[in-house]
Amino acid sequence: MTKTIQIAPVNKTLVVKASQAKAFDVFTNGIDRWWPKSHGIGSTPVVQSIIEPRLGGRWYTRHADGSEAVVGHMRVWEPPHRIVFGWEINASWKPDSTVSSEVEVRFIAMDQNTTRVELEHRNFENLGKEGGEKMRSDVNGGWPGLLELYKQAAEA
Image (cartoon, rainbow, N blue to C red; front, side, top):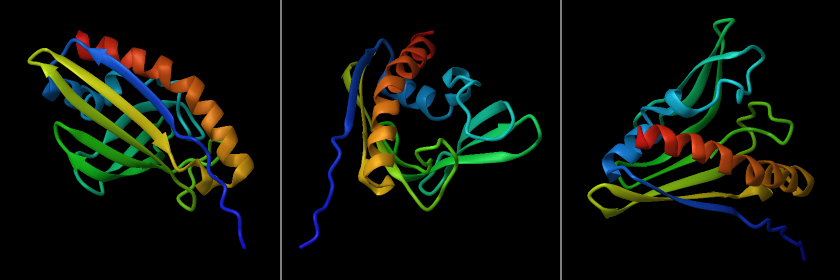
């Protein structure tokens, strides 16, 4: 009998003072306004972060040398309610389409000008036990700061 490893997902929730549609738009179409240029997986500095707004669309970065690095692909595209994308990054923080954890972001309208954003990063076991545990630890510490930057952009 094989034993399947399971690594707990990372869950983060925040409330933004923005409509559901704006919260979704800033997270997706506006990602270059809030995702830090220092958080890139390419070999040279990031100059732009882009999410292609459709099912199957890429989240990718353009770099100073003209190269691109794919962060992941949109698996669910349901504006303004939800996105799910593959996180195609290995435990060494390199682009790797052979391994993929998954991120789901839900945008829940609390009223016309307030949205609860729920992020779940999961399926770390796809990176193996050690790699999955390292990635979980890294993103558990990283998402709060990134989501604060997102919140500032959404509320601007």
